[in-house]
Amino acid sequence: MRVALVTGAAGGLGRAVARRLAADGALVAVFDRSPGRELDLLAEEIGGFAVPADVADPEAVREMAAAVEERAGAPIEVLVANAAYMTMAPFTEHDLDDWWRIVDTNLGGTFACVQAVLPGMRARGGGHMVFVASEWGVIGWPGASAYAASKAGLISLAKTLGRELAPEGIAVNAIAPSVIDTPQLEVDARAAGVSSEEIRRRYAERVPLGRTAAPEEIAAAVAHLTDPRMSSLVGQVIHVNGGTTRARA
Amino acid sequence: MRERVALVTGAASGIGAAVVAELSRRGWVTAGLDLRPAAGADHAIGVDVADPAQVGAAVQRVERELGPIGAVVSAAGHYAMVPVADITRAQWRHMLHVHLGGLFNVCRAVVPGMTERGRGAIVAVTSELAIGGGDGDAHYAAAKGAIIGLVRSLAVELAPEGIRVNAVAPGPTDTPLLESSSPWRDPAYLATLPARRLVTPEEVAVTAAFLIEEGTFCCGEVISPNAGAVI
Image 1 (cartoon, rainbow over the protein chains, first blue to last red):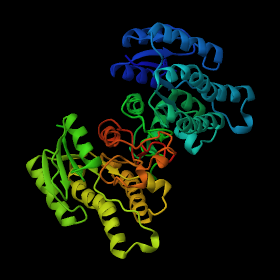
Image 2 (cartoon, chains in turn blue, orange; image 1 turned 45 degrees about the vertical axis):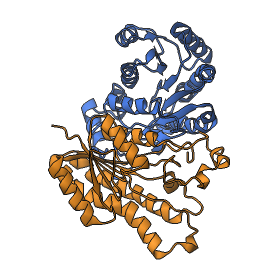
Image 3 (tube, chains in turn green, orange; image 1 turned 90 degrees about the horizontal axis):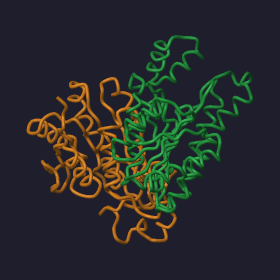
Image 4 (cartoon, rainbow over the protein chains, first blue to last red; image 1 turned 180 degrees about the vertical axis):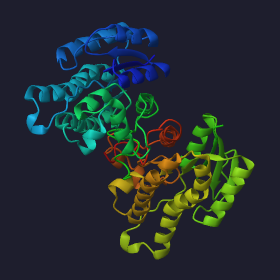
């Protein structure tokens, strides 16, 4: 049975990814910052287990990965690095500690996860990693300097590790979703000072497909990138964004 | 009722044949268009995709005999390396008319029906050479690059109609298009690829099938299983 680790699994997208990988037959370890009933229920639902830890703490991440591999009795084969944190503020007003917290969680947290799972993937002779980046990491976004920079960093990390690890049979790629219909929309709505319905309408308006994404649609792209048959797809960014950056409306 | 009829061009060999096999496995009824008989397809039609009349007639026949076409994979193509100064007008024209014209002709023929039904998925097979270019690949890369422009424009034009248009841009793939003496098969070249090997036709087919069935939020996207040739 494939062992998969999904970070940020308590959130809307992470949950959908964990469910999808489990449905495709993987034993999924669901990882999120804090232990909680929701994470436990998700683990129970998909026949996996919950491993709470803070991705921004490399030591905790290493211990968590070791615990997963011991409990699963096999090395982690699939890593989906999805844990993210964001706040929005005009660039000059961005709180410095918060700016670094975003980068340390999104980019640094992924770095820590890669370091933690790599020995196991090397031992088993291959694996798949998917970094969840963002449309904003491709095109930038006003008020999201730290988030966009962290996500652009993830894209470069995926390209670099795609090159560096492909010779060992480890396929690393990124996905860059645009707006997904998850509770994260509430954060954007608050930042914009509008209702969640209004922010959803505004986002949908600029998507050629005319709507926001369901988490399951993004999870399907993750499933494709981690398909055991797909090992020559490396260092790429899949733009699952309804056409926002791939075609001009 | 969801249409489960897929039309695949270049279906007789290589990537097109792999696409037919993958879609058949997933329960699609396949119509294979090619100059030669597409043995694996449920319905094989001899067609030169560069000829709009032949393509139009084939699409009509497929829809009459199998039902409405729900998905198209445009994979017909040929490959040649020629230094730019030596490319004849006939070679240039042939390259553009098969690759870009083939996609254009198929889209013209299937889009009215898909628009009427309010759904459809089109996947074009382009190439990493469209993105990275290649020494001696001027006419091939130009034709494949034009496909990406067409795909992205159709994607945004047809999105409101419920039709998704996307592309796969494989790297050098292990198909009959690459002769045994091809430089793309040279071990010294393969050693430069991060994945150290040719792409398999199955990887391209699985990606095309993903874009048809599950890539429902992909619009104008180009997915590149290319062994790391272009990152």
